[in-house]
Length: 175
Image (cartoon, rainbow, N blue to C red; front, side, top):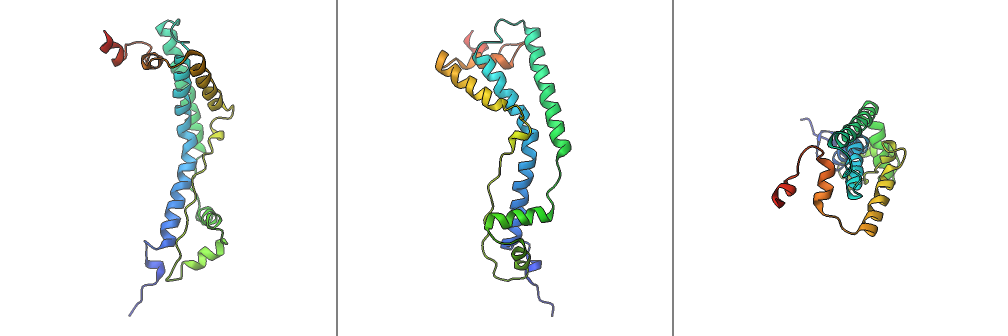
């Protein structure tokens, strides 16, 4: 009779912890590819809040948005090209650090029947890779200053920043 040991249990505490630690590490490595689009949206919203797009012709406004989109796509592609899956050693080490045990202890734990619950560490943002000029702080400060100086602005003004050639649904509803 062949006994099934802990290695054959896919839902053991250790296997679940390794899976979720890998998922957290993949998210940390994908976030720099997504963040340029978030930053672009934030910068456009702040520029619209300040009314920087209002005096511009639609073609120039659309060109600025297209240029920003191209820069965001370039930054996204650079981040995706640097992406690599975390290795087992990296995942094991991260899980060991999060639980304050030695990595060798986790390896030995694979053969135990009673495995303790393991903590999964929180994701670290790592946004500085995709925002080396810290534009996120510039946009945040500009938004706060705009709120302090101009007060709350209508949502239609912000929406106009994203729609250079047409009217937004809120603008059409007002007429």
